[in-house]
Length: 165
Ligand code: ADP
Image 1 (cartoon, rainbow, N blue to C red):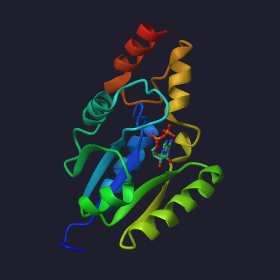
Image 2 (cartoon, protein in one colour; image 1 turned 120 degrees about the vertical axis):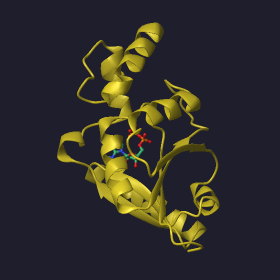
Image 3 (tube, rainbow, N blue to C red; image 1 turned 180 degrees about the vertical axis):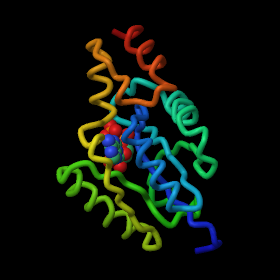
């Protein structure tokens, strides 16, 4: 560690941020001095919201958490973590099915950057089924997503699905 601040990175697509993500952000920000929520660009799939929009939705959602910063990145997470002086990657675990892939990624990232640990936080039971794709599917088909995403961004998703749908 180059300094005393314990910095963690929470990477993801956040297309869009859900209450499941927010739950992990709150938990991680309580454990670390600073949490960098890093929106990944260079996705294969065409996103519903572009990188800037996803960052803006996140910012609006976390405005009461002073030690959380929203950024974006492309390329290798292990390199980005080194640049940001982070000591940990945060991952949310929903089901056992998340485990195998995450285990592989964690070991690969450790190989690339041995000072970097991956910290897994268990989701709250009520968000176990929740993912951005579930939210998008429900919204596109006219379902009610009020219980799935932060209230601050509800209108943005409704507008976007109406425009595209
Ligand atoms: P997703 O489409 O699955 O929401 P993301 O790439 O945006 O995909 O997810 C980023 C991170 O957030 C991953 O570590 C993922 O496991 C975690 N995550 C996503 N949804 C939840 C949830 N409901 N509970 C806990 N962690 C979650």
